[in-house]
Image (cartoon, rainbow, N blue to C red; front, side, top):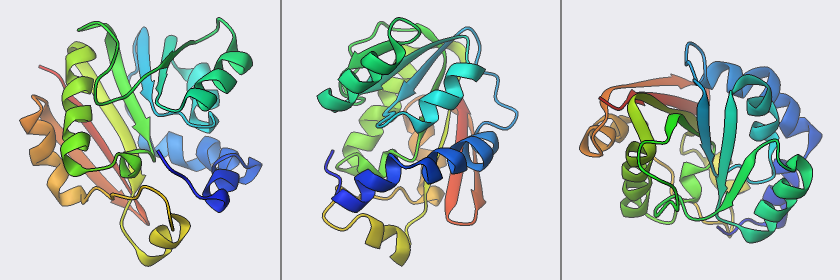
Length: 188
């Protein structure tokens, strides 16, 4: 995952952390029951992890960037399980989690094919009845400007239900709000 300096600053800022805590995660996880074991894919600098730690039962995070994974380990110690790995090939066992979540990171997955691999991996590590939920930004000129020289492959929300069904999920639900969309789907 490549991020420009402005984007790095923004994702590590108090301003972003407040927006995540007060607005983004409450909306993204509205009516979502996380259960006893939750996996967060792509926590980055940890703004979402700080909120999830208070809401989830046992929390594990999967981070592709080694430096970010080390920072998260240093911050959380043994309170959460930090795994360094790729969401497209998760080094995690089948059926371990009640919930898998990801927030504002899908657009950093380098291709639609790899995004679909991530959806399939989320399905694989969920228990039957488990939920896959999260949110991401919608393509726009402003969103693109924040991502100049970044990996930037926005997910068209209208394509997501079919893509999630192709990964095995049932009842995908997509909602739009401002510049974001949220999603949730269940593993049968």
